[in-house]
Image (cartoon, rainbow, N blue to C red):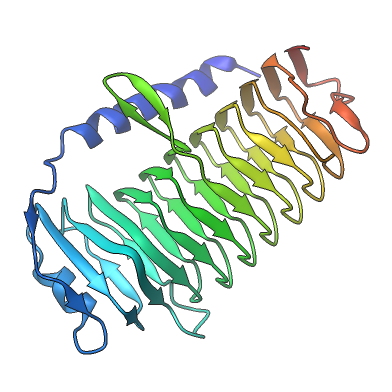
Length: 298
């Protein structure tokens, strides 16, 4: 495999990060919106850059933040809920704008909980659960900070990063210092985190446990930095890297064995770094595919 292709993804990630920090900060606060009588979608459609929309109650809506809406915050204050209903064809929240922050909500049901499509968003301090597909879906050249969330009991992946997208999962950056902001990603019906199709994820400080298949899956020309996570008791491998992809890992731990290997590799892929205590019921690692490169130290 040509590692230069993987390195190019890291360069793209840096560009996305730089663009995000150029966006203006939210500074203007609107009054509290009560979902018993007001439409959150209507407030979003009227929002201006810098607006903070504080929400209470349960919003039984399927929301779309369009590309012309930029640099706004939706704040549920840890109590509000967005309920996408039983319709499994419509996402609960779709973000196409840039500089969007969603925080302090319980987001439930609908097709996928939060979908970022050609957008840029910070998703923090939410509970995202019981969707019919994916908890947080970062798709189509998108960028996301994902931190301090509980992502649980979704039918497919907890988090999926795909189609030339970038995600920073489990930390924030302040003056070049990485501040741990761990997510709990547990009990999802497929993988805890999936990174695929020319995408990049920086995954730090999370608890990734009891997902039906893998803790983390990296595939199809993708790259992940995976550091200081607790990866426990997933149904298959703790980490799998395959299909011309690569991972750099260190500091990850396993308390309760994963169902397969701690880490496994297939199809022209590689793993660098330190294994830590990653392990599964089948052993610490599987590099039996001769096309894989094992550069792991203990």
